[in-house]
Amino acid sequence: MLPVAGTAGAFGFMGWYAAKVTFGKKKVGAPHFVAGPVQKIAALSALPGEWSEVDFFYDRRPCTLLRVPRLVEGGLEAGEAHLMAFSRVCTHLGCPVNLVKDLEVLAFAYNYRPPKGERHPQLGCRCHYSVFDPLRGGEAMFGKATLPLPRVRLELRGQDVYATGIEPAPILST
Ligand code: FES
Image (tube, rainbow, N blue to C red):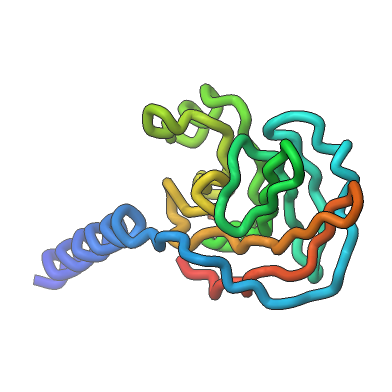
């Protein structure tokens, strides 16, 4: 009787967990920035083309500044350039995320293919292969993470990009 109950319990948990990570991903809404220090991140010229990136620390959190092809809620329009910045702390268990530009790497290493019409670089976490979409405000698209990456508030001063706030760090959950 005990082994049967144990097996049923294990399958029940696996089913619940699979449903949670598949259907429980939180949609990204309007940003809720908390004001922080005003900190220069980079000159605009350090982001010469789409998907250029600059990594930095803000509020003691590793972050990344990306030049993206279109304006995204929570981002910054700087002349011709559209910018977004995110915390690089994965919302699953806190490993660092990195920009994955090669969609073949994304497909084979992360087992994720963005839907048609949305084939662009993604932020990926190598610990358990969660994928976050920068053009959806950092929404968790695939893998164990369910919460989006916190966004960093950006400001342009002259030709330099500054960080002035960040969304709160989520409580990490398995
Ligand atoms: S820590 Fe990133 S997917 Fe687990």
